[in-house]
Image 1 (cartoon, rainbow, N blue to C red):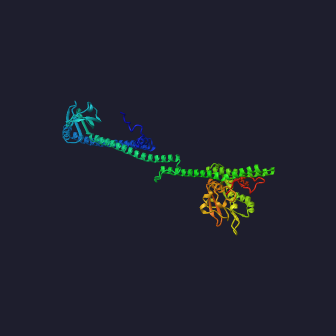
Image 2 (image 1 turned 180 degrees about the vertical axis):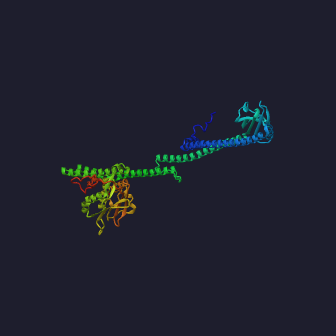
Image 3 (image 1 turned 30 degrees about the vertical axis):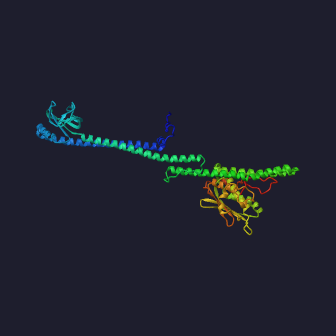
Length: 514
């Protein structure tokens, strides 16, 4: 006969068993417990102070009563001597109350009063004292406490006048009992509050942990829950959700870039291979081999420029070149770039017009801003050819805005449909109408990366007809004059010079544009 296994053996801990240890380890529970202890200490000190003041007040009242009794008895003794004093004490001793009286002979024998027993030697020490005593009317043998004053009378008689402190003792008991119950209630309520707060915080932390685990498992669409209270956990969740959104965008962009690279670079690589294979198969003279090598090198240069552009966009997105920023003269950059592209505009049959306000300064990287502007002008020259009878003009303008500097490049070509304007800022995106033109779809993406790095905005607007690209960059704060700043600087655009024998116009920035 086999013994049944215990179903609880080896089972995972129940939620309550896991919850309690986690509860005690939470910061919220520990902080609430610390606040509880501190509050209990303050409450104990406060109750102790109240009890001490109440005792002191009652003692002062007792002493005032004793002083009044003594004055009255002293008057009686002055008027009638010891015999009258004894009669008054006999009469007062029989009345109910907390007052104590005792008159003794010179040898210590009790003559009158309501005090039966005193500690030995009490009557030998004149003055005030707090003693234990026993009344003559007490039915049980239990000592009481009293504050008394002892006086030496003429002929060796002794007088004791005092008052019982039972009321003070009862008040002390009431205060101690109230303090005990209060601290107990505070402790219980504090524990419940600690449990409630820690449980609520722990539940939200567990929810965040569960979401984080699902994200680590591959669910990049998971987001942390927002309670709507606006507390620190909500602020943390909002920031983490924003970070997750950004990570999701980067992951999606990485996947898209990988797909685009595999798709768009396959054609030039295939063309490069076919050109080399054809040269090996058909070339019969050194000149034909040289021409084939020139074409292969052109294709390789295009591929190198594509990868350089991708690396530059990656650097812009990570913000790794912000240390090289300084105040630059945007007016000078725009004028120099327009002058550089005037011959290319004439070859394309277009007129390049510049409208530049002088003294426009922004905080940024001179080469990157020039590179972004070069891509925009190059795009405008490629795709800005107007329809029949249209204006063959490309306008480059720079003007001061409200707290920023507005840089724009406008043409009168076919433009970009509004529904595609956000999409063309991604990498390797080329619209169907532009696939007949040279390029790889990286120019606008690089320009957008440069603008984001400088804290600006890039907008694509309708130029009616054509496209107008507007860049808004924060204006630089004025600084002290620097003599070197006024010297003209060459526009170094990391140019790749065109080799002899290569076809097509040179790209001054070495980056394929849209």
